[in-house]
Amino acid sequence: MARRVVVTGLGVVAPCGIGQDDFWAGLLAAPPQGERRVTGFDPEPWFDSPKDARRTDRFAQFALAAAGMALDQAGELDANPAKVGVVMGTGIGGLATLEEQILVYYQKEPRRVSPFLVPMMMANAGSAAISMRYGFAGPCSTTVTACAASTHAIGDAYRFVREGRCDVMICGGSEAAMTPVGMQGFQNMTAMSKAGISRPFDRERDGFLMAEAAAVLVLEDLDRAVARGATILGEVLGQANTADAYHITAPSPGGAGAVACMELALHDAGLEPADIVHINAHGTSTPLNDAAEAEAIVKVFGTPGPVVTSTKGVTGHALGAAGAIEAAAVLLSMQHRLVPPTAGTAALDPEMPTIDLVLGAEARPWEPGPSLSNSFGFGGHNGTLVLGPTPKR
Amino acid sequence: MADNFERFKECAVRVLSVDADKVTREASFAEDLDADSLDLVELVMALEEEFGVTVEEEELDGIETAGQAYDLVAGKL
Image 1 (cartoon, rainbow over the protein chains, first blue to last red):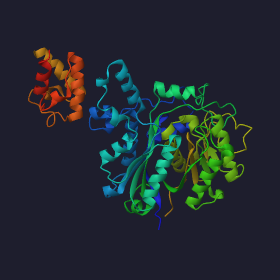
Image 2: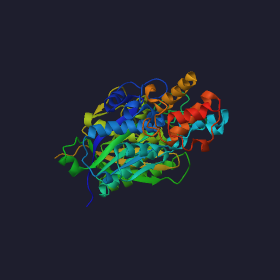
Image 3: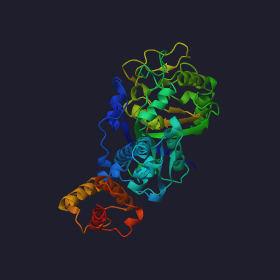
Image 4: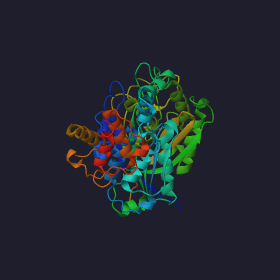
């Protein structure tokens, strides 16, 4: 008998705000100008000493901070540590540390390379740090599937709780890859917006704005969450993980891969397209993704279909962390009964089939119901989460 | 001599994030300075830069106190 899985804690580190309240305020405000970096982040409160903070790459510092905030909200878990696990997603891991130490290797000498390079750059550093700090001895893994990484991480964590292997899972994703070489790589493949504007689904869209961020969700078996009086922010109803098997960067034609993924997620949740009220789109502001995704949404849901937004208009594209901050955005949209607008976007591209995109300066009020969050990554990795409001008792 | 120990202390404070008054000759890396083997490697790298000396890995065998580490480096000056 599959267990129901609810969200009992949420932590966010994002360019538009640190902490879920500031993050939410940022999603409703006008988008920031310029690069989507997290400003004013102090890692030290999340570590036992400044030395430990220094031995941790920024991407893992973000992960630990987001986990700390989520666990603060979740309160006393009262769980067997062997049945609490961690799955985090990331696109690349500790790139900043690697870049820095490569320079040390060549500009100074090999023997000066930091003894901490390996534990700092490894993509599993975020998951490991969370597990070690809190003593969680359940499954501890890291999903590395590009822009779908944290959606997959949450999906995997959800299944651990649903099937009973774990009672609680800490999950989400983190990314801090805005290094000189990292950004140049994305620029040189013409994936990033030359105009410097993130405007998902807009006719003038010309690429994404890179971002850094992290978000962590505490997932828990519904019965134990209720029994211990936990705050319940929402529910995970289903998930899907599929592959385009088509092209390293372009989505499959007509959004076929996205269609398959969303349909599978609905099936996993035991829902029909008509049950879905809202979609937080991957909506990166790239010519290819947005066109394919709009087509896919209309194929599955008809037109105009559910209320759609892309929060990347505000946050930019946080790569491996995008799925996690977008799951956070959906949960907060349910709490506040508002769907944030797709910032930066003037109008839906007329070449696309019509989707019900929230535009303009105002968030749209809604009656929270089952929602999808999509993430589609380079390499053809597709992920969809089905999220629902706090179950009524 | 006192001057060199001050420079040594500054490296230890920076790398190990400990208070300066904890860095005494008798201070044990493991017990008093919360430093494991990787911390020691990082400290030695900082000392190599500060004093312009080279310390081979094998020379760290048996180095357990700040005083022993200081003597090792000072002996190369």
